[in-house]
Image (cartoon, rainbow, N blue to C red; front, side, top):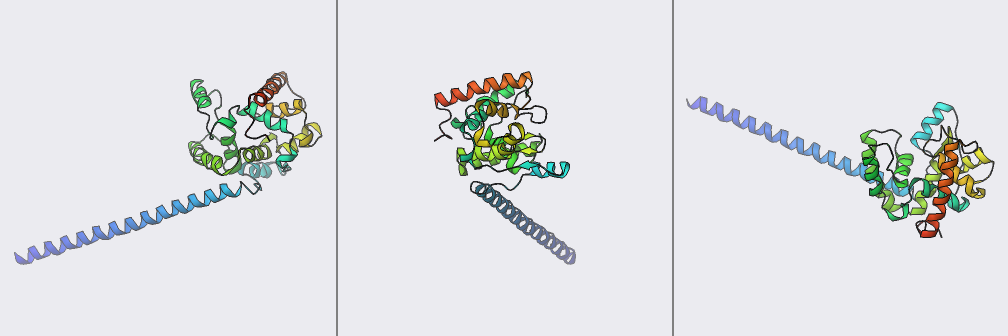
Length: 246
């Protein structure tokens, strides 16, 4: 009887020791996993911070298109070498409340939800995150990462820098990226020489650059460009362009 009791106690101690060992190992794994998450987060923040000063050498989508097409066109143009009307045009077209939000336009998001997803609610800040750091597509993973990175971009970048990067990595035609290459591609001029009409037409094709043309605009693009012309002048007058204009 004493031997049986002793065996049970020994077996119980072994089980207790095994549980303690498993618990210790699990805690160690969780600690390392947490450290890995923190390290990854710090690296991503450094990446975001670096692009506030350094021009992105390429993007995931640009690399994909380069492999598919064999070559792409992109000439980085500094902000002071882009016609001011181009900034106003793209803001009027894509994100009229750009100066008044911190990366998310809640009114536009609610309108997009009410429309059943038929219209977009993404701000320019969100689009630059997608273009500069992520990939194209409508997966929940990309959307979640976009939502996480957008406040960081708004925190570390100026509004002027967000627009500068956006206009230099946005696609304007198949294999044509950035306003510098687009101005030459469509009009044979530099980005600084864009007229109001040309800037409005470039902004008008941004949502669907592979199916629209700025130099040979269809009727829809003409109408949309006319609306953007009015919108660009409106935001100049009412102060909604103040955050990115001198």
